[in-house]
Length: 294
Image (cartoon, rainbow, N blue to C red):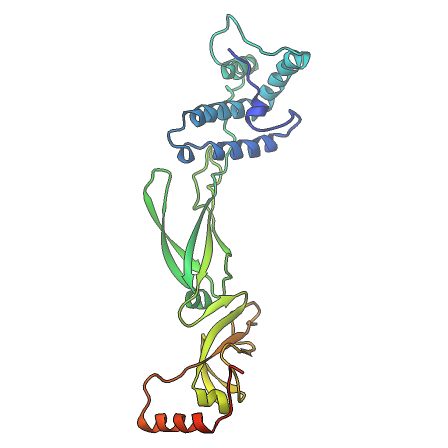
């Protein structure tokens, strides 16, 4: 049998590591070479076998000590390989089998790897509209389990959730091993803008449409916010593209506070004029000295 470098297999640089560090390294390596993520990859299949084998030896303190002794006595002295000629079985048999014999002598039970292993976390993303994120709601999503079957889960999106924030559902991830805790489901929230509002940080952006005479003369205009309506003062001579900021009418922050609502001015010209409107515009064209191209 070939003596393998189990620490290298688990991407550990030294043998001076704790059992907890070995568990962490095992989970990372197992996740990287998991069959579900490497479908049809024969090299990954062999790699995962070595990873499981390494964990079974190194996760048991007694077999780890025995492995370290043999490793230090052979490889540290410059030998390039170690094989157990004349011995049948695997390296696991060599280590765990001998330990079983030792424990039989002491009338103890056979050793087996029953260390609880937490299941892997699953990460996914879902979209929510600005209104859904602002007010909060319950949303059903479908995820696939280890068997490839769809599982429907209800997600409660809290009101005022931020863009990119993650919701954690405890125990809804991959199944555990040996009685450990199941992994968690982490759901990243992507907030989508709509025709009315866009979200930037904690501020909401919207358009405020004005007639040419409202923009020229100034006025007060009613503006729809995400949860009510407010009156906005428009100074005379305001231009398209200018912005008016309305404090406290934006997206939710925390402790009842909110960002601002930013209204971008868009001056709209009527496409279809009445005879009277056309006459007034023609008159204005004759008497006005205003030329935006000068």
